Each structure stands twice: as structure tokens, then as C-alpha cells.
Length: 403
Image 1: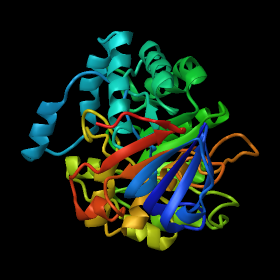
Image 2: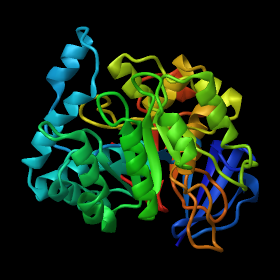
Image 3: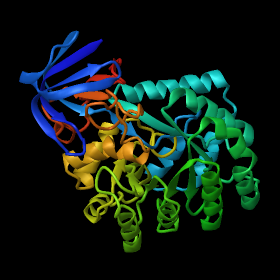
Image 4: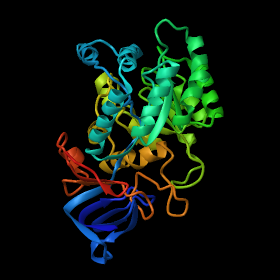
């Protein structure tokens, strides 16, 4: 079955050539994009969809979420809004609620969050463990995550549980816990931050998980300057996320990691993932996205959907914030929320030849993940902040429910 989507006012491809097409059309065949170009030259298809002069983007790629949780942290949010500072300790509240929730309800809650994200244009997403923090519950979280998300990250190194020695817990993370989650995950992460895991502990987690064949990511430089960025670059991590507090050396290291990459091939570096909704909720300085881009660092935007510091699945909100407050252009922000997220997950390439279809961009052979806005251009995402603009969503070529 093929579908022609025509009468597209603006088609923002986010492909290697950064093309923006006017009066365009796209043909979807099965789960793939089979053609795109001027609407006047579109081939015939089994069915046609009139975009009505709307803008078409790649679906959002949300490369950083924490969806496997139960419980509520409204009181913590209210206290923070009243002036209390954020610390990593609140994770323990969610851990208790998550451990006390059965598999069925935990899965139901996660599926609801995924559906909410998809209805707003997210077509590919990652999620993490990290609210179990013992062998049984981390393995359970990983198993459930593998049924609801596109990519699963092991984050046993999220916080040292109360009553446990940090060194003993790090050994658990690197040993029995890693073995228990390994069948369900393809990535590993560590919260390298004061109040969480120090440099030596983070290094052990990263090395052990790398030796186990997992791709790496790092939570780093959220609450202050620290070793997170340096470790991420040293270990060749796919991304380092948060990056609120960066020294000139951190920015230089991230930029240097991309020196062997020409925009589509070569040696990829470490993506800097900014989480602006989290920054607003924790009242941290917004990550220096403009400075990172200007230095040549590849940037991603992600929701960081979690119950404590960023309880939103709205990638459009993140894009709007990046434009209005982080000084990104609309095109840069959309690219960071689509292609940048794919790059952070190693899914920016792939085509009909290798069978591993790329996400985050619109090109022939890529997965048909499409987001049609109820607006004539992507500029409206920032021009009309807070207005729900998702008109239609296709995920792997299948139309999704939109609220």
C-alpha cells in the first residue's frame, strides 16, 4: 500500500542537505519513504492525503526519557517553585512507588505516556531504567521498557539507594544488575554528578558496560561543572545529556569529538543533549545550546520526561523554549529535536540497502516517521507558543491517533 501526501506548504527534510521544500509531496510505501519532491511531479499512489497547505516535519525523536515509573512528586515540585533547590535525592521517592507497583499497572502507565508523546508528534523514543535500583526491579523495568520504547537504556547508576554504601552499590550495578538487564537493553547511562556517582564510580560503570557491548550515554554537568563531559568524550559515548554547566575545555572537547565527521559520514562524536523543560523546572541555567552549535558540536533536544524534574512529553515545548530562550533558529531547534535525537541514538543512517531504516529525517529509504503541523510552516512552533499544532502523525508509515 502506498500513500501520497501532497499539497505540503513546507517540507523540512532535516536530511544531509538541510533541504526545505515548498509546495511538496511525499510518497510512503509500507514503512518507508519511497519518493519526495515537487507536488507537481508526484507519482501515482494507492491513496492520497491532502495536507491542506500545512507543514510536514520528521517525527520528533525523543532521545532521553524516564517513562517506567509510578507515583507522584507534586509536593517536591511545589517546594522547588517556592525556592528550594533541586538535588538528586528525590529519585528515592519514585523508586519506592515504582517498586510497589505491579507489572500490569507499570506497563499501563508507561504505554499511556508513550501514547501521549506520539499524539504530539514523537515517533521514536528512548527510555531508561533507574527507578528500581535493585537487581529484581531494574530487570523488571528493563523488561517492561523493552515492550513500550524503541530504545532502552540501563540506568542502574541513577542514585545510590538509602542505606547502601556507594562502592558496594557500584559493584552491584557493574555485576549482577548488569547481567540481569542485559537481555533487554542496548545502552547504559550513569548520573555523574554530586549527590549521585563520582568520577571513579562513573568510570567503572562506563567501562564495564562498554565491555558488555552496550552503547554509552552520560548524565553530566547538570548541577555544576564536573567530569561528565570529559568522561563521555573519553569513552566515546553517543551523548552527554543536561550539559548546563560547561567550561571552555568541555565545549572544546565536545567539538573536537566531531572533527572526523563531515555531516553524514566519518567518525561520529558525542552529541550534547539539552533538556530545556528540565532546566525550567529545576531553575537551572539553560544549557548553552547556541555556544555548542557555534563551536561545531552536534546538538539534540529531548523531553527528559520524568516525574520529578520534567513531567512533560511535549517535544514542541522543548523546541519552542530552544528558540525563544536558547537563541536557536527554528530550523536548528527542529533539527536538534529530530535528526539530533537520531544521532544521539545512532539511528541517523540506514536505508533500503542495509535494512536498518534511519529516523529523524525525511529521505528516500528512511522510515516514514512524519509529523504534519496545523500551520503553514515550522516557524509557528515558536510563533504560537503553547498552541497544540499537531494535525497528523505517521509512525513507520502507519497513521497514529492524534488528540
